[in-house]
Length: 262
Image 1 (cartoon, rainbow, N blue to C red):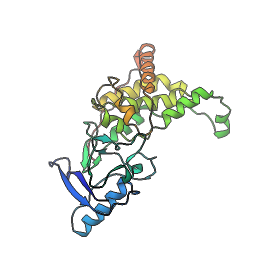
Image 2: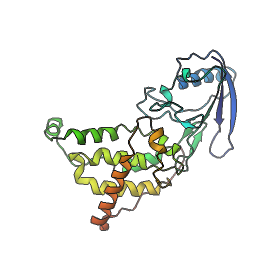
Image 3: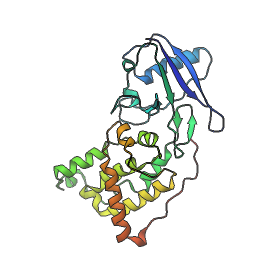
Image 4: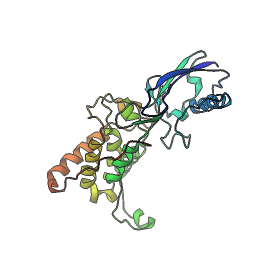
């Protein structure tokens, strides 16, 4: 296969960026799009040019680090597929494949296809954990969890924090990500004692990170490679409203980010 890769190149946040076209010959249809970028970068290095910067880690659809826009769609045209899982057989010989980074104020650009997703870390730090002691593993196994609750929690826990939901949302909202983390922990017995505090703290931090508001358009769940259900946003809203009435005196002050660099 012969393809043309139209890639956003930007040296740093302070310089202007632009799309650059790169013809790539002998593309194996079984390559992932990241492997295609690897081949391009090897060519660029041999020519003495700067390789394309992009994030990756596990390349197995687990870590969530490889996300960027492909032909205007987060992670590309295939549903429930991360960028590292998208193979070149989904494109035709002679196609032009456009790649650009996530576009969201809360995800400032670092270089080329790399953005800073530290805002997600701040939301997790605000309350995305269980600090109540549940004992060792055998003790935890003695807590009975119904299948319906376990399924709901595990569906939400599938979120890999890639940011596709934010990139796909017209408002750049992080409601699906935050809702998934709140639902994952809040529905389990181990997370119940901190359920109200968690909802208040994480929603407050999400609002402080310059994400947009959720208007239930649904683009987020459509672009999510793990197909996190839209219902997690309803769970988040319910927990937050209930906690706001019962714990008004405990409303948290969000920690504002101090830097947006890498």
